Amino acid sequence: MTTAPLCISADSHVVESPEFFKPLAKRFGDRAPRVVVADPARGPQLDLGNGQLGLGISGFFMANVDFTTPEAQELRKKGYELARPGVYDVHERLKDQDIDGVDAEVLYPSVLFNVYQVNDLEILKATFAAYNDWTADYCKEAPDRLFPLACLQLYDLDAAIAEMERAKKLGHVGVCIPATAPSDRLYSNRWYDKFWAAAQALRMPLTMHIFTGATPNHGLPFSQAGSPLAFAGVMFTIADIIQSGVCQRYPGLKFVITEFETGWTAIMLKRLDWHYVRGGGAKTFGNPLKPSEYWKRNFYVTFEDDPIGIRTRDFIGTNTLLWGNDYPHGDSVFPNSQRVLNEVLQDCTPEECYEMTVKNVVELYNLPFTLDGPSQAKVIAGAGRR
Image (cartoon, rainbow, N blue to C red):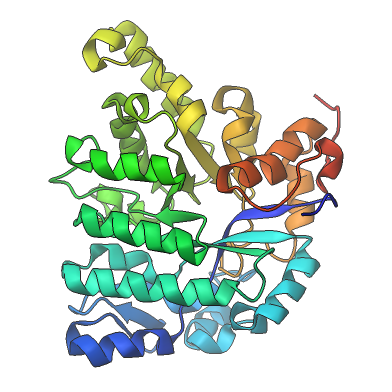
C-alpha cells in the first residue's frame, strides 16, 4: 500500500510480439492470426488468418510522431524496430513510467484489436487464452505498478465465464469485450444475461477499447469510422445497453469506454435523456431511471488530452472519467503526460483532479493503493480556478 502522490494511467498498452503468435501458427497453420508484411510501405500487420489485415503495427510504437511527414512514412516500414525498450522489458517500462510521472498502468492489448473479428471460435478462444497467460506473466514482474486486462470472446458464454474466472485468478483486474456487438446479436439480447451476471458477481469491469468491435468500423457504414468518428459506433452500444435494461438488472456491472475520448459523451446523454422524458422512457423501456443516471452508476470513459469532455464534466460526472496516457502508441501523450494533464485539467478543483487521475481507477479496479484524498494526487492543476 502507498499514500504517496499518485497519477495512474487507466489506458496503457502492451504490444504483442511476432513470437507471441508462433505457437498459434504451429497449432492452426495458415488459419491462425500471424504478423505479416503485405505492403512494405506500411510495415508489419496482423493477418487474421483469412487474408484480412489488421492495423499497422508500426503505429503502436510511434509516440510523438507527425504522421503526415515523409520521415513518418519511412518509420512505418520499420515495425518492431521502433519499440522502446520499455515495451518488452518491464524494468525499462518502469523507468518510462517515472519519466512520464505515472505510478501505475492498466494494460490493454494492441495487435489483438482486430482479432475480435475472427470467425473461427476455436482460434479466437486459443488466441485470447494465450494472451491472457502472456500478459499476466508480463505484469508479475511489477505487480504493484502493472495491472492487466484479459481478452474474452462472447460467442460461447460458458467458455467466456470460465476464462474470466481463470483470468481473475491470474491477476487480471478486468476484461476486454468488443466495443460493438455482432449485428445479429446486440448487447440488448437477453442471451448475454448470464455473462453480465457473472461479471457483476466477480466484480470484473468490462472494457470496450476503440478498434475492438466484433464488426468492422464499429458497425458504421464508412471506413473513416475506424478513427475520428469511431465514437458514433460505441454510442449505439451504450444506448443499447442502457435502454434495454442491462444496467437496471445488473446495478453493479461496470463498463469502461476506452480511447474514444469524451467530448461526445454529454450530448449523447442529453439526447438519450430527452428521448426518455419526451418519449415516456419508463413506459417504453421499463427503466425507472434516466439514461444519464445509469451512465453515472454503470459507466466510465477514458480521456487522454481532450479538453471538451472536461468542460462538460458536470453533466458527464467526474466520477465516470478516467485518464490514460496510451503508452506506447502513436496517439500517446508520453512522455508529456504531466504537462498535458495540467493543461487539460487547468480549471478543475483538486478534488476533481484526484478523482480522474487516482480515485476512480483505484476504486474501479480495486488497485492496491490507499486513497487519502486530493492531496495524494500529483495533478492539482488550476486548483480552485472554477
